[in-house]
Every structure is written in C-alpha cells, then in structure tokens.
Length: 231
Image (cartoon, rainbow, N blue to C red; front, side, top):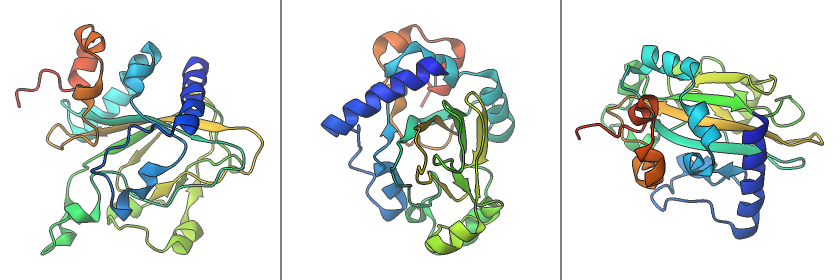
C-alpha cells in the first residue's frame, strides 16, 4: 500500500506541473465532468508492478465473478488523490451509467438491467470525513439517476471512513463523489472499475498497456484485460 501511495503521489505531482492527464477527447459530457478532476492519475498498469498485483487481488476478482460474471474485465484503472485544501468532485454515476447512453424512448429500462459496472476503491491512506473520504448515497443504485441536485445529494450521503489497505466496493450506478479535503494530510485511493465482458471498456486498456506487461501477464491479468477475447 505504501509503495502504491508513493508512486501515485509522484505522478500526481508531475501531472500538476505538465497537466498531462491522458485525457480522451471523447469524454466531454456533463455526466463525465468528474473525470477532469485534478487529482486523477490514469494508466496505472504502466506505472509499476504493484498495480498489476493489486488489480488481480482474489477478493476483487471473486466479487466480480459473482456480480459481473467470470469473464468480467477491467474497464478503467486510476488513482484519485485529494490534497489538503483541495475541493471535491461533482456527484456522479460511473460509466456506463451516462444519460447519453440510455434509450430515449425507454430510459427506465436501466432500472431493471443487470449490474453493468462495479467500483473497487483500495484505500492507500486512511479515509476520514476531514480528508475527503468518498461520499456515497445509499440505495441510489436501485433506480439509476444522475444527481443533478447537489444539495439533495449532500443531504442524503454518507462518507466512507477506513484504514489504508481497506477496499470499498460499490455499484457503478450509486451516486458518489470525492469530498473536499479539510484536513492537513492527503488522501488517495486506487479506483478499479470492472464491467461485464460485453460492455465496451471506458479506457482502451489493452491498447495503452505496454507490450512487455501484456507479454508477461498472468492468466488473471490476461483475463481482465480481455487479451484472449475473440472479438
């Protein structure tokens, strides 16, 4: 956990100087504004072997097997850091629960759809109410709805509190956001977004992961990167 934290911190400082966020020009709707958050570091597979180890943790894969299927894949892999004094994110839902993807003639079809994504947050530091622990609105995933009313979201949310090394798991359709850091220490966590194999990944994972990582990948990494997927 400490090694991952130190790597994320160094890349976060570099990104703040260069503003190189590995941003994808496709992701520009309001539902995706949270992805422009200044504490995000992307492309973790290319930033150290520790992130390969974390991505294939048995607990994460076992939960994904049960909820998303035994061929579920990694859709995005990033870290989110909230520095002291830094503000929070816009409340949001995770991909693919973006309104632009809902069928306009029957948007409520998503209310009964199977889970289309799960988010795993591995805490690299303690998360507290003071340092920007993630806010979640309980039960909001039952009827996916974008949290346009921020005041209503904050009136009904709870904040994640936990120790470094803990893992928080929630449905991609649950309303959530990083909160402002009012403390004097940073808070950071790894965000592993998993999806069923039939959902197009948020990131082109297999394209940006280095060839040496793919050639030496374990069976679990090959599975979550869909390297052997026939299509």
